[in-house]
Length: 187
Length: 429
Image (cartoon, rainbow over all chains, first blue to last red):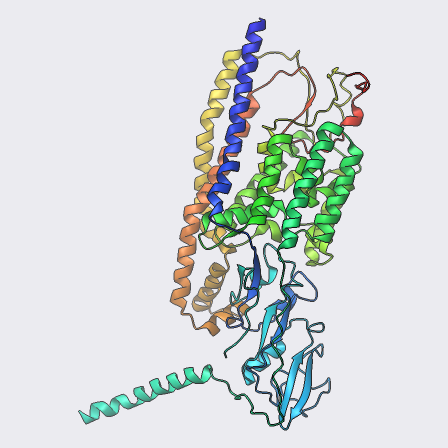
């Protein structure tokens, strides 16, 4: 009787051990399979400004409020226009710095006089909420020197970026963290 | 001959105009001004970069927290300590690191990397996936006990455990399997990360989420007061994997610190998860040939379930493919063509802007549906197999001489300890 019990026990032990080996196999196998596909530097989410359609989803879709995606300005592309499509509302009666004529709902674009008839525009990123209205204005009426980018120091790097999911033109993708920004350098 | 040439002129003009338009399109409308006042362009500021260091610190904290939890659950047997671990994990992984990346979601990164050549998995995501599983294989589900931020918040809010009827419970525990199968399928198809999207507590950790998810999270927490850990038990897809690995755990939390005296004090309501396997030495033994027959019958049902599951998911593939955005867009565009409902979504507007032809889009749609046709059956086979195996396991009745935790179900939370009257005299070795 006693012997039988021992035998029973050892068979159960064997099943247990076999199960353990079976369970451990994927734990060993998976890293081997994935070592080729793993990268140490991680990834970030990035907007391709050339694919962006300035739909405004960046502002509303991000899990953060205000959104981590902001407007950037490439001064080298800017025409320094007095009548700026990104700064002024369509149909603005006067060209001024008044709130009623500004395109930006938060007043995040700063306009600075350089020389007749040129003005420099800068984005105050603390105020920018990523609505992309100015980007659309600049794209439609100007050079397209304003563009959207995700501020990586603000972004919480969701595993599944909520803006990417809602981006209609698929402009947001995972990129290796070595190239975190795509700065516009051509029109 | 001359006439022929004339006929071509409009077309040539058209081509020239189109080319010109294309050039125009990519041209600076306002050339860079030539400044006379000696204006210097503002230096392009390098925007702040994201550093990867924090993610490696997370991995280190994960390992340390798992070690401490395993020690508390198996050696020290301190429920108080486990509660403090839960508080720590909630504070660090939840509120401080805002819940990304977590082991639960990393399942999708692994599946995306396994089935797609274009994606490389971040090393930290891979480690977050593997380390809790390794710990489950050695010490049981210590990750659930006090390290997982999703589990921690529920552990701390579960105050008044109520038991569900067994039939309801067993139906509900099937949901995580379906969730896991769909999550792996959708991420492998590059469509959606559903675990992350429907994470109920991340909104609470970030204090920022769509209000529907906040409501869902709060409802779960409210339900969790009575029905402990509702997410872990009835939704968590990673818990399925942890459960499988934990069944083979080398060392596992025990109810009693020494030998079980079969006092039955832990039988009634010590475990809110119904994870205590009772001692049953006197149970009536069934006729062995009958139980063997039932075992074989159920065993033969496994392939039937697997095939049925595969077939079910094969037929469901076109429906499932709707989670992919290109398929949705293609349906919208087709609906516009066929029924005249104008495609007004932002995706449709953007599609028009890119200049892609409808044929290209429909082609892409077909390819995605074909991929779903090929892959979805595997999800069905997995579900069929799991159902079959769990049925077979019902026919195997074991005799136990002590009360012990069900290693697959036990979250190593240590609630049962205080019910056990057995004491170890620590001075005697």
